[in-house]
Image (tube, rainbow, N blue to C red; front, top):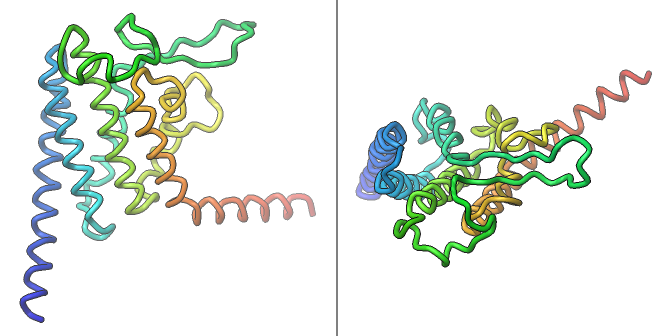
Length: 212
């Protein structure tokens, strides 16, 4: 039994050390993002490894700076994305996302390698967004409360012109990013269900009390 405790303790320590090392790498690569696709590739690989580590952790194992880490990752979800909002009075009500590339808005990832060719920088940014979403999905699985401070940025209630995971789901050029956005939303909604139910009940009670 003592041996088992030692092994478990060792695994916990390994997870924490891995988490810290990977977040350091994410911070460093994020600060160096620019015109070199190799930096974006390294950042994406670090995010992928971080998502795997977080998925094996429990809420109480996360360091105190988890919120700061989530904030950094949230910003990476929208790397190299811009909105093109229809002009006032336009018959179209959709919001599209465009990148610096002039390629088709829904070009398949199979049409270009992830980190090669003339579109390597664009493809590398897709990979970063995909892995950043995977990281957030891992955090959401542990506890959706970790993402509540970022709710308005990830899933805005009203502002249609605001970048959000929903807009990535509908318009991101990469099919892999759109799939990652769907996975994140699924993980977040399922984990947040108890909270959302409680908020709904509270709103109903408030509404009823105001009507009396």
